[in-house]
Length: 94
Length: 287
Image 1: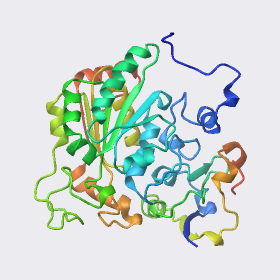
Image 2: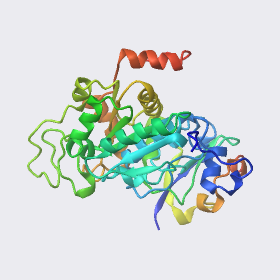
Image 3: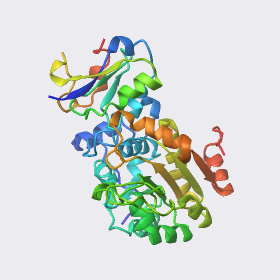
């Protein structure tokens, strides 16, 4: 059991800051849904460093990202299973 | 033998690897992506074994976005943390022996200029402070004095992070480390001053606190290195293990160091400035 970043998409879709996607040290881990205008996390790549939490709280001041236990996730997104297909995931993260 | 750049036979693209197809269709191959689009395009960097919350990885990730032509770039690195991520990019990586990165890059760039006349090929050396300022120091200085046309990027974490925390030439005076228990007794090396003395065309010093700035600095450095001369970027990329920075505080530390002593600095020669303005006349080039 370990912690991964989870983005509250109701809060995130209200803004368009995208800062977490730029400050994450892992490549293609915080992805962006251009249709639903929200960021979401590929949990299989998240190392749980919490940099995005600091960015969202202190820099963006949106408080949309929390660290939660991986088995508490309702529908975890795994990039290794889904592959890199923005056309498939756009709009699927309301 | 033709000296033309090699390309895939039309109709055979679908037999290339998945990563290559993704990079062409939804990535930066053939068209430069912006930092503001991150999260929506396939990145050159893949999964890597760097520590969680490593600022060096963040810098490398942003560097890959800044490269003007990643498909025509060759990376050269050496022992150190950085190579753990650099080897996980979709860009050829040459593992130079400690000390010879800039010598390898010199020969490679000269060879590429002869071999590929129809395509500019970029050579980027990315190594740590130990690899460039201590062990590779003479190679770095000589490549600058010879005006070799490639970019040198120093991932300055101010410590030998990979081998347990020995002080390097770039460590701050007084820094306490596991393998420097009395604190470092000498000043940090002035690589920016040395670069100026040896006539480097474009010099920048920065921290990864502003992603757009990192990408734009890398882009400028690589473009100037194509035509004008050597370029050098010194980036503060903290080691959160050896300096015991909790990972949620890594960016706070970067901002702190930036405001206290590191700052953002850019030194550009007149020739390099004129060249940048000639290729990008619409954009105003900052001093």
